[in-house]
Length: 574
Ligand code: DON
Image 1 (cartoon, protein in one colour):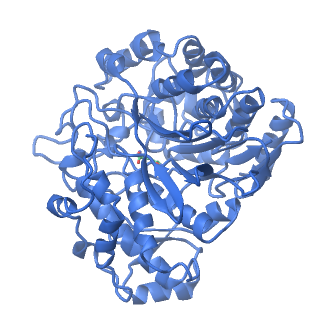
Image 2 (cartoon, protein in one colour):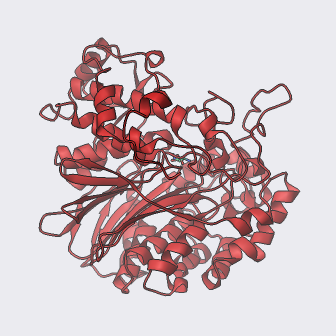
Image 3 (cartoon, helix red, strand yellow):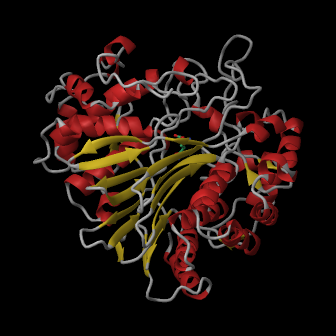
């Protein structure tokens, strides 16, 4: 973020929210510390909203919901009420950990071949652009479910700050301006999106003011009755526009949408318990698989960015993403072998395939067969994105990731509502082995079916130790989310970096296919990259990715947090 905008944001903190200077406030990459509560999110105005709710006596749920709605307004290209997501909630009083799935679903009229032409070929951009790419949104259903059950303040109080941000407007940041430039042709084609997110077809500049009157009105309706989104005038407006423009989402889809409480997926790591999102996200399963593989590696004594440590991580990632491509999908539709995939004995078996001297080509790395996986845990199975973390004075914690999928989602706004719609349908395997926008491939387990949830990589995570809250973290970044969270956990829990260092440290990523080891540009010593190449890693330098938000608790019960320097977020505490 430019200095000028940081100053504006800081002025906002002191002047508009009435938050006094006793507040700890850190721009992206800075570690901040506080005693009572903390919020980290991808946008300073949204973090400030969360903090003001905590200071009003709201708990972590109230603050997380208010922050999420504020992010929906100020970071509309990343995440919003036209999309969906996942959250983890840890209640301090009981130690209970719950996961809420408010991910988008395929419309009831969706079919497995809806993005193919008559010859069976994938129609370019059909699953990413426009009304046909939209899944049934879940954000409002999820937020109202968790807030009504576990929040302390009235629902209307936590919605109010987002109404203000939409109606009064806010200063456009570099990222938002860049996002409108990147998606301009699509935004320009949809009249409602053009009116709101461009200035007569021209992209916004940093420093401009963006107001969203329609969204403000929609949020006012939601403040009175969140169900209106699914059964009332908002639902009618969405479905009317869908019908006019060839979309599939109907009133029936909206009326029947329900978020789902799920059991988090958990594993042990160094006397700690790491819990994250179960399917239909692949995040938790593969995060734990990667941690299990790491635990067996005996590489802890090596420096964080030694060629051996990085090589082992890369080889582990290939195994995890190969399994992901075959086995992961919506557990309401396919049997996902979660218990086997997160079994340390399974990791021990698979780590035998890893040679420390030689990288395996993707073609040599295979997903395990269902028969092989059955040897492990016999437990039966039940059946652009934004992350925020919140911890309150009682040490209740929320870790929440939500999204409209790609930059500006489907690139369309439901006329009259101000709601930018997701293009989450692209997270399905739209045809076997056809890469999605993140280059991820999949097969039957993640094929489209009516009412099915597309497979996600979102990885909202909470770590506990000795029954006490320890850390909350997550990130956007599509396929890279899982490996980003994995590396931040290693940075923090193994290499003992502080919060700012843990989210800042350069990252690597390998997702099996394409057969590449992505490394953040300028993040690694050239001699390390040479050593990795000598082992056969196909190294590819890429611009930095991810936008993590981390809060951790120190042994003296104070909080430490940081927002990722790759983004424009902030950590705020009091
Ligand atoms: O659910 C998923 O895995 C994706 N739809 C997330 C998209 C995302 O992180 C976009 N950000 N770069």
